[in-house]
Image 1: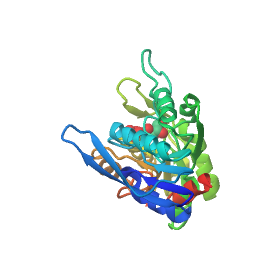
Image 2: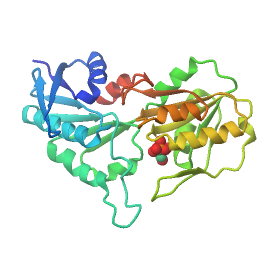
Image 3: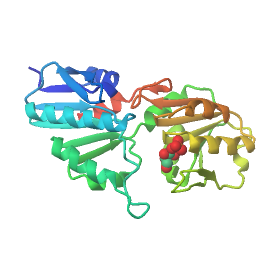
Length: 292
Ligand code: R5P
């Protein structure tokens, strides 16, 4: 029996497979049967280690379903293994880390209790929206960054005098880190989001530096695409050349991808924290390093 088992949740099956190639462990698959009322019946295929289990399950849409599945896998792992590490490549609910408007529930506080209660002793995530979310967790937490892997991908493209852009001031440090690895400069735009409607506006007036240059718009995630669309429309008006988007988590809800392309974006590159058409960058090596 292996010292370690890697339990692949359905939302991260391929990533868990890549991970188990990098760390020596027994791969355990999960099979799901969904009942007509929406409940999931999960069956694990494979033997669990008595010592340590690693559960890999991203919490992307359907978020609540994937969350309950993650907690169920952790709970089952804890019945067998003395140590359980939860690898949640995309941490759903991470944007609900504080009370923005009176009466709002800080769901990250609830998740802190649920992950501990289910039996995880440590949680590893990739580019969490903000570390504030982890203030509500009493188990060990680790956030790893996908930026070096994303940069490796962009280094292979022949970009013309590239410049890194953050669509908002909140992403300034991310853009700075990307630009440092990429060996270029960066600019952070001023974005305003209406807290009630979610509508996004770019407040930056004009920027000459982007003229005739290829741009890399860097963000942690794309959900509706609103932030990237507004930024791309603004940058196109400033007469930039091509716009590429680099993001860790591409949720791309509804027709976000189509709308982003329509706004003038040449290509979207994301990681396999959320598998899909744009997830060209594998993050398993980075996660493996965080586990070992
Ligand atoms: C916001 O602060 C985040 O970093 C992302 O820019 C945002 O969550 C993306 O959401 P959407 O695609 O809906 O604008």
